[in-house]
Amino acid sequence: MTPEQRSRCMSRIRATKTKPEMRLRKALWTQGLRYRVNRKLPGKPDLVFVGARLAVFVDGCFWHGCPIHGKSPKSNQSYWTPKIARNRERDVIVSAALQSAGWTVLRFWEHEIEADLGGVVETIAVAKSKATFPPLAVSH
Image (cartoon, rainbow, N blue to C red; front, side):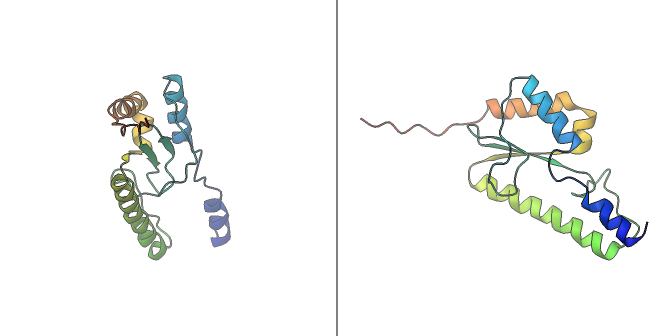
């Protein structure tokens, strides 16, 4: 591919509503697990269970440097290697920020959703059920 073709190709890759994310969303909804999307939280979690303070991220194997499936492109490695490293660093910072604000953070690789969607749904359901809710303020 020419650099212009590659640029056009890469610009068309979605950041939201990816196939793995949509598969997970549909499976959760089918199980009666209601979530929110597009919440203004650090890192823009893919799914948010507000009452349970649970943030779920679906990390793409390429973009987040999966140790199993993440492949470094053969061309322009001087750009891609630091780019993916920055993405991984940002993931750690975002998770820490959410956790310090009292959120539970779950991250799943896209290949985990493809290989074991039921297990991912179960993990989320268990985390949601274990959520500790802050006491309600009662006024007298």
